[in-house]
Image 1 (cartoon, rainbow, N blue to C red):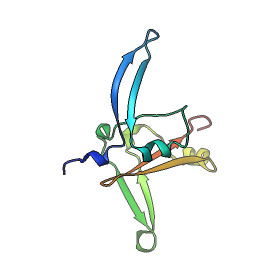
Image 2: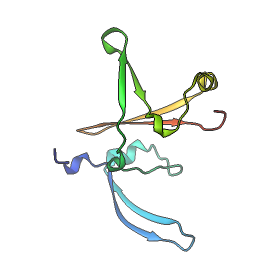
Image 3: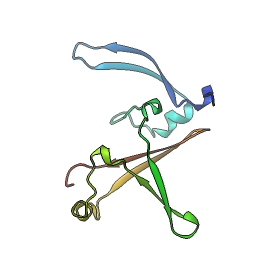
Amino acid sequence: MPITKAEFMGNILSTVVLKNNKIKFKVMLDESEAESLKGSMKNIHMFSENLCEEDARIVQKGAKGATKYFLLPKHFGYDMSKESKRHLAGKKFLCQKIDSPSKVIFIYTINRIGI
C-alpha cells in the first residue's frame, strides 16, 4: 500500500554537520505533530518507522482478548527471567501511542537504572 503524504509525521529538510561533530537538523512537521510535543524542546528523540525490521508479536489474554501483551524478541537481550521480574515489580514504565491513518506506533520507555 503506498504511503500518502498525510501519513508522514514529519520530514528532515536539511542537515548541517557542526564543528563539535553534532548534526543540526531542520525539520518540518504537521501542525498536529508540533502540538503533540506540548512545547517540549529538549529530550526529543527522532526515529523512522522504516527502521523497524524486527518481527514481534502481541499475545491476547482474558475475556475476548481484552488484555494485550507486547512480546520483546529474545535477541534484544532484555532479560526477563524470574529474578529480573522481581527487580521490575513496582518500576514505572512509560508508553506513548502515536496514531497515523494507516498505523499505530507504540513507544515504551524503561529506565535502565535499578534494573
